[in-house]
Image (cartoon, rainbow, N blue to C red; front, side):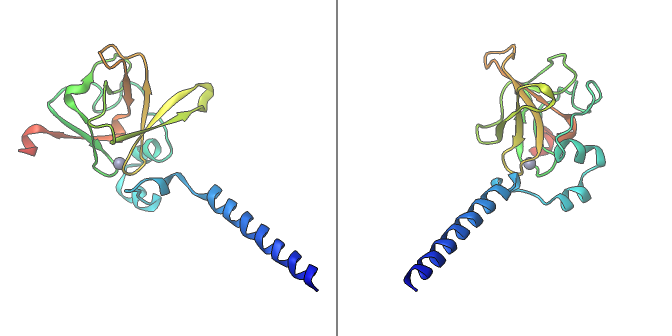
Length: 165
Ligand SMILES: [Zn+2]
């Protein structure tokens, strides 16, 4: 009788342990972001092209983006949640076909994640607030930071300085 109870107890424990494991594995990326937005809501508020880039981590075709050769004074924000990501001061023309920046507006604005898709080892960059895909960051920047944040125009919006004041 005692042994049976012990076995039952052990089984319950291992079952609980298993469940704990499953929960951890099924935790999606979005739960890590304080301002995560549901896919349904994003689908409503974004264009299909934006959804493809921001949610499905796609890449817009080079030289097609609205902000590729855009050099006005202002702040670039996340197209999904509005978080301020880059100052226009950090933008430069990398001739790569995508908006490029040498640093984020602040250290906590952007998160990085290793990306091994498409047979390349790259560092994906995401909005730290909502987790929206922005592009990739490379270590070949021409300025003092040595960094090149290569961002899809579809992932960002722009606020000009005038509007802010
Ligand atoms: Zn965002």
